[in-house]
Image (cartoon, rainbow, N blue to C red):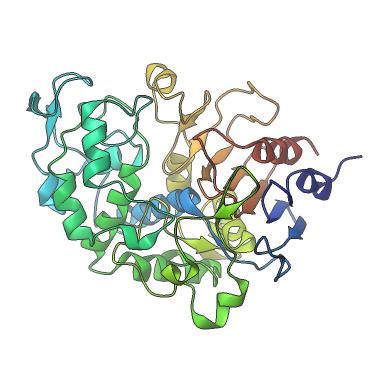
Length: 381
């Protein structure tokens, strides 16, 4: 009978990831496997508390933080974001997605907080990266979330984004990524705190996520894994040196800037399964969790988003399975993947949290074979 170690062993070492940590929790039972090493040299064995750049599985955490602002009545879902992000109060929209960036019309309505949460603000990545407005988006603001030093400070980043027209009218289309970075800036401006400070106070501390943040302090650096990209002869060093994480970045990216451990993200997942609370510590209301983990897209919007979604819907900060179209799809499963080789989901139907962390970056927006095998194991074992 296949176990979790068997799933990992086929993909760790050699041309695969140097190491991996996988955690599957169902109720009071937790299965954890740490395999391989922190680097290709094998200098440090992988451990349950190894720290990874988790990339886009940052997104659900930041979305949850936006919902705490709503619960505190500091913002509302239908509030225009221009109240706090005046740079974006009057966006223009390209006449058609393929139009030149100079051929624009006014937005028919303001961008709202809900548009940021469900990724329908009008900025982001579609299936076609060659569109003029998308190319301009990359030129102006799209930095590498695996390299914190590649981002300018938030105010400068926002000023550059304001020069990029929307690809679609607000609310019309799902576009990937940019809205999470906007959520991070919104949190800071509404709360009057930096994003790292707000996340620490409202999410990490209540959930005991002691190894999650935007920087790796000196006492934890021995647990910090290296980042690699696939190469012709095996993994090659990634785009940012480890010391890029030794100090707080100028732009803490809400789209993918966190480091974390398997147990820390699992604590966040358990909070979602617990209706917003973990061990008596409440972070969100049950209604906020429901909205966060519910699909908000129309069938047409899902069908147009096949580069990143594979038939799933989108909640706030993560995808939502709406049909059992594959062995690993369970209706209601919520979570996401990270470009550094990470994935994390909760499965309400079975009370399962499934977290897989590796340090081998993805080369495409589609999940890796290891991710797919891990998901299949998580929903069928």
